[in-house]
Length: 195
Image (cartoon, rainbow, N blue to C red; front, side, top):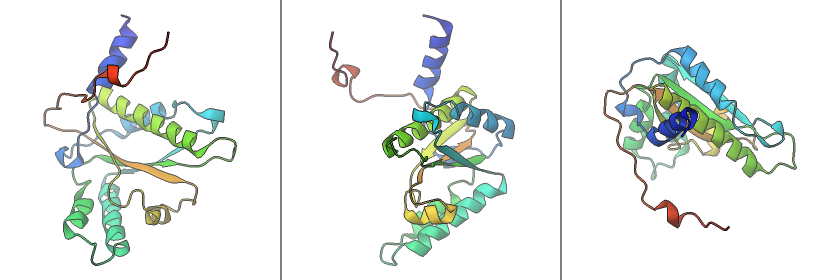
């Protein structure tokens, strides 16, 4: 097995979700975050539309975004559906994170390319970023909770109707052990091989 395959196999197999409250508040150097964004930029893209866009929040701006997210939830949730516990979770989600990145699929101007392909390309960009973070020892989390997929988030971010938020990414460091990975369904049950 060649060294490149072994190295990438190791990173892919060891990437794990680390929820932001498990992070320790230590700051990731901005230059490393820029390196991760450069990796994201090498995702596959049909028609070279490069639909991924990232909004990076660092330092005090992480908590500011979390406050805005919590207030958005409060303002756009019917009183009988509002949960104070959820509000508090959104408010404090980034307290221990170094950086928060909102990943957006910005729909291109080539109507022949289906939106699904733009979503897939942006998801690949996110995976590139998360794998790079793992390789650098940076804990990471791809979140989709709260108002991430709600139309009100698009308004908050001033996105167009055809654009989509694909997640809120949290980066940081953790002192906790990273759990072992597992798969519940054997690979053989997921593959049909024709030869």
